Length: 432
Ligand code: 4AD
Ligand code: MG
Image (cartoon, rainbow, N blue to C red; front, side):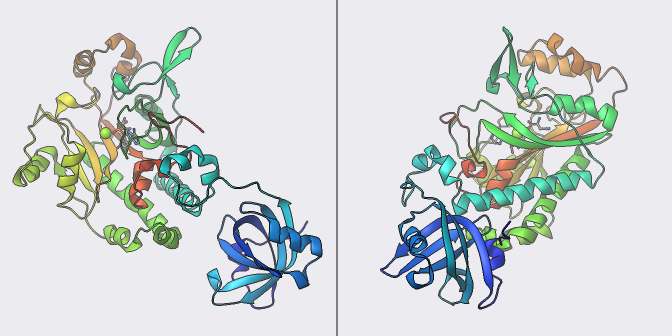
């Protein structure tokens, strides 16, 4: 078979060297005897010059007539030309159209909704291609981070009989005449796993029926979670900081140009690597807010507005710990020193990107767990298996979850979380 080069590779060749590429037409214009066809592949774009004199008639006619997104297979010689994107173009010696595309529905200046309706086609845009590559690196880095620290990858069930993060956002699934739910978190199962594997992590689809339309919420997202036996709150927050820094480092290693293409200045991210990321208590966060005229009573969750105000006073991500116990998920333990606070944390991203990590130590007190479940209208009998974990060799343990799309939205400075996932699912969108 013919040997092809990636376009990025072809762009490194010198004047007169032969190349063979394949891809899709990105832009095209032609005059009588010349066609200028910009071709893209996964790696980048290059301009191809098709000249009537140098090609068989049929091939030149194809080059002239092929519309954008037609698939093509091209051989030619590299010509160095400063005006061409990438400083080189290909003078075609062979121009084969694999499929002549119909009129591509996406031209310029379309509404966001139109692009979402045509997501299966918009996926090919350089913008989404670039974001998906960075996503690949982010998820790869998360695997690398945990595996290199002795964590095992562990897979929980996705169909689960009960809630972990509150009944209000559960997606119900018909189950042989009965009902079950899509996973809101792997956590309860990971807590079972730490008694076998001690340190576990995963990256998996997660589902929340989020009825609010915001630029931060998806109904289906990917969460990277970890759970560790013998770990308390402090160590878990340190892990979260180390993990996010590790991910940033990998992204900066591989995607400096991609970030710049997306309009994100890589130096802003690089500057975070050598800084200490503060940990503050929720109570201290309230003080900062009060100093700036925002009075939030103890016990209230921080809303977007308040998180944004708080983060104006920091230039790195911040870990906020010890949120009020009463508003928290049932498994978050009371702080024995401050019984109205829970041993839990969120990590907030700078620049208004909000919560990217949520985690906690886990309550090991059966009475406290049953009481919290009842308070939230749950029947503790449905959690017997979970309570068993406190009956047979219970140990202190902690864990947290990173929202992959939240993290990516911040890293890439995206306006909306929907661009952090290929086919977003929200309250108003379930296709394509
Ligand atoms: O803070 P959350 O709800 O924490 C948990 O689910 C814990 N059980 C995790 C654990 O301790 N293992 O969710 C964790 C993170 C959030 O910080 C956020 O980044 C992301 O998941 N997240 C969402 N991302 C996109 N769309 C949504 N609807 C999200 N809900 C949470
Ligand atoms: Mg949370």
